[in-house]
Image 1: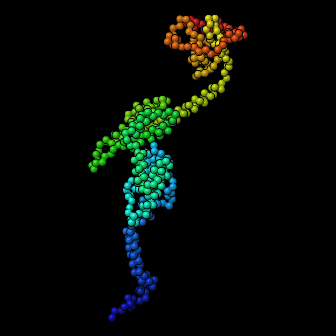
Image 2: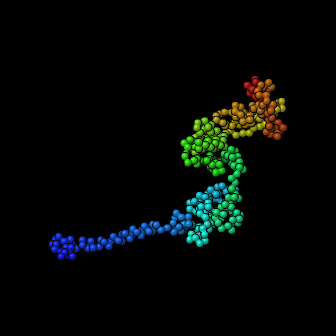
Image 3: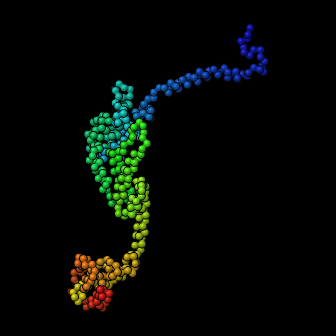
Length: 394
């Protein structure tokens, strides 16, 4: 008869120790538990997740969401629908609620288990929309209960995707000027017009099943970008005419961002030059001057002229003569032909002589006031000889 004990008749040294026997005894109990855990995990994975708790579901609402805030910085006022709708679409997409206004997620039945979650999220989107439009417009959509209905109603009223809006944008982009704006602000302003045109007239893309290898679409994009570069350069001030000509001589034209970077550098360089020039000018104005006044006298033939009593140093050369009457260089006011009249036989520009009318600088002369006798000797000599020898020879 075979013994039932597996280790009967075996010596104590050959029999396994008690801890090992205890391990063999408990090992079968672990196998069913592991199998059950694996089965439960598979069952949980196959079960659908509650959409309210799923962050990827449009029904999920974060605890930090606030329905009483505006999602965009500028509210809809009836004239900014293009920019407002663009900002709202991006904001709703980041909130994973875009399906409530584009028709992807329709209103479920009242008996549907997801109806309560849909109603909650729909009311949140409605609140976001009403908080992002002006109060005068809110009254017209306040009693609508569906977010998609409100969105479609606003689009039908304020969307101006017609030929008149394109006509206005094209007129702006071809007539806009820099004026007092900096290069950065002017570029931002004109780029906003470009983006609106792109919204109305987007470049089509190939929808064929077999994609073609031609470069038609990239060529169209390059032509449009060159158009934008030309409009941007055309609106610059005349002080950028030099760098504008250099850019337009390039073939092909550089991208618009490269043009913007070049003009920013030119603007910075011009600003530094103006600062240096202003510093030099302020230092020159602090130099001493000979102060005096111009005295209007009459010579023997009755014509008026001004006797000089001061010299003004200005211009690029410190000792260069500058007329304070006609502001030309090379002579002073006491020998100015435009002030005292042209001598007989002067062969200058006849048109300029005939068209020029000298303005009187004093209502009463020293001759009429009786101050001529007290004038210095050099002034009296100037009365008798108002012109230099070189001018008299002409």
